[in-house]
Length: 499
Image 1: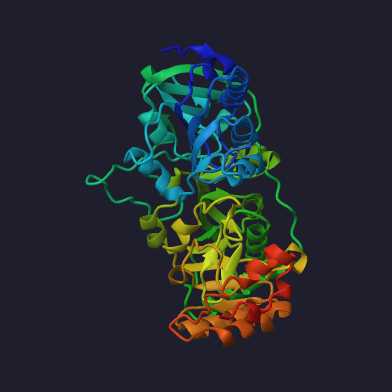
Image 2 (image 1 turned 180 degrees about the horizontal axis):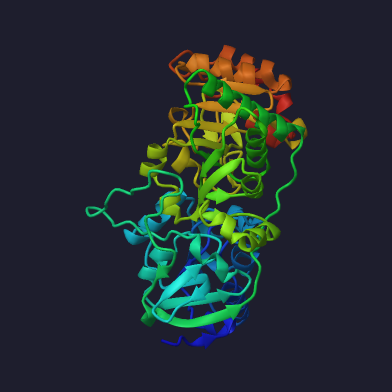
């Protein structure tokens, strides 16, 4: 079957006001981007003519400027789920212009299939190769592509992107679980187990057209390591090696999951550089530059991920060395990479980043001062809740020291104290396992708080009303309130809040 060729503008013209669009990709990796850029132009023209034009967007995770950015700037997004990192999109969300649904990434595909989020009208999927019988080969991410392709009521648009080499065809493991009550066990017992196919099988009759393009992924290059992130990385590595020595972690170690960013890279480099660390296995949702480097150095044995969230030069190096990676690297759908059953079976060590942590171990991953969305919860909840060991990291201070990342009470709670085992800052490590609430507070303040804020936190604990969790509710958010008024948490005076 020969598929109709369309320009990106012709494909975008098929999408109407009020439609819901499902997109391939996970982070900017593998995200459809040619058609959405043209859709933004349509939105601009419609709004100039005084006509409404907005769409709903379902994705695996974040996208790039050619999707979230341009559509948000043209006020073309009515609803969006789940995670995002685009600064323009964030600006419009925090202005209250977009109905943004911050969801656990591992739940996205199944919630679409369950009908919780409404219809999927169009699926726009980036591919590196197409076969006449409907076999298509995804690019740099698994995302939610199987589900949106099957659910799309009006049709599927394929972006055949020549930037991605067809040589990568073997690294995907495409698998969509059945829904309850027919769901079967997901039989992944090792990091590199494959349970699906290297291609996505779609119904050829649903393909309304193929858009040919050559567009690089909108990859993010993270800031280089600094003394703070290096120290956090070393603290994590030292703690985990000590756990291995005392027999908590087996001698062969356990697979790692780590979040996105400079701190995550620093942790992986610290682990990889330790002579005491056996070859590392990775089972995660996003694979960063550090993992690719460590795979080339044979310090990382193998990796399973949903997304190659790497810089474009690093992505091309994977394509150029595909024979090296084919038996070491697997790309999965997000509901498999983030699946609770698999995470628990493999016994992952989950390491994620928090914006702030309170003295009892609750973690905030998403909201600045409880109201301004940063990015979203991503997959951290999928992993932390189900991990063998759940670790949250953050620098002890932010904004040049004007903000303490250790606070009396989180301004927004994404991860409760029940799911957080270890807190790590550049100051040290607080092990919360087997401790009561008061003991947790003492461990976090003593080991993780910056010296400039330690006494302030002890002062709060002194005025807190007695109970299982000791709080003075009138003063619990005093440090946040002081920052919003004065721009500096150092100026907090708890006596002003005590009633």
